[in-house]
Length: 326
Image (cartoon, rainbow, N blue to C red):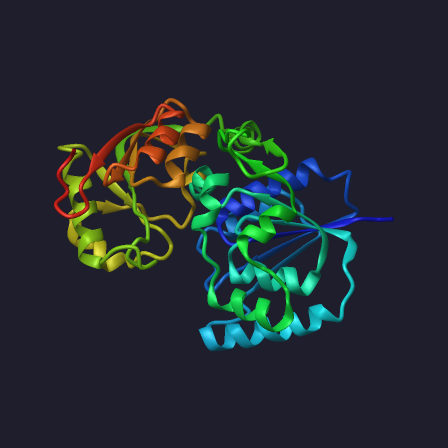
């Protein structure tokens, strides 16, 4: 039986990892497709597409509102109940808890599920943490009406293997099998023409945009981090969901590039990269260990501190309310 694979991605890092896995699997499948789906396709995605010759690339934004999202998911669940499992299709994804991934699972009904890293989330996803995971409203509706369980705990039990760039401890992880691809990522993004620059890059995360903290808290924290760099030449690397005009008040330059951090490091080696427990801090160290990397951690997160220190990343604990180092 000829087998095919589909790779569902939401971020540039997803696409880079999917490219590595697809290359490893090129003899396993007769056809490999890439699906990029989210509420907004992030800048930098297109620049990641050339790392593998995909048989098909699909870019889709299937819903833009919560009501429409629920309608689409319920309709897909109804169709799923009357379709057969496609045993000839393997499904790869980075974010198992995303509604956009759930829609693709319902539409394709694959025979096997594999995952790859979504980010720092995977580092803290351990067996003893499963009890803390709560399903979203759409997952609960689908389970109640159609008896289809798309909850993260259920889906994780179906994952055949997890591909990772991180140093995940298999003994406390919840994956049946772990396949490490950190060396492949380093090789994929290796370059001989790297320009060393005397700059400090501050990676900005969308904490306000994701509802994790207030806008005032986010701006105050990053102003503190910028000030903490002293007289260095500081540049901000904004997240695609950050609003540029909010950060122009900082009095420092903003990196004028849509390239994701991982691709920028193919061309430049800054003096230092800093941020708040960002995945980009770890990928920076994987790609170029010569770069000094510092992670500011909010309110003494010992678990994340241990994980970041595995990569020789210096950690500075700060208080979210007043930005005073502990």
